[in-house]
Image 1: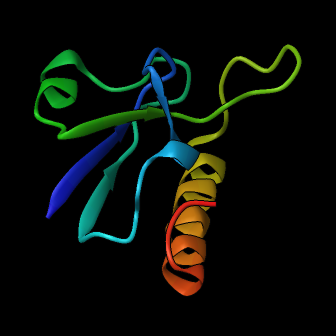
Image 2: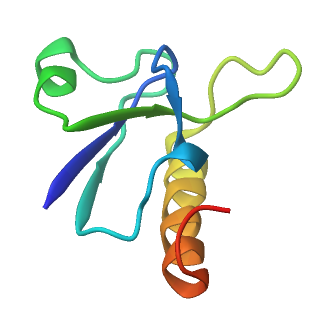
Length: 80
């Protein structure tokens, strides 16, 4: 199982990661993000691209976006 953490400073977007593999998604606190020790244990760090002046999302919204993207990729055969 690969560990994927969300981090607004990550270089890779959620949509650039192949999420068809076995994975666990780790989300940080709203506004604060992941603790540094948690971040260091992740295999991949991804950001959720934002539009406009939004700085962070509610953690339940971020979880929904991540889970939907994993399901979408698995149904349609990877990133697109």
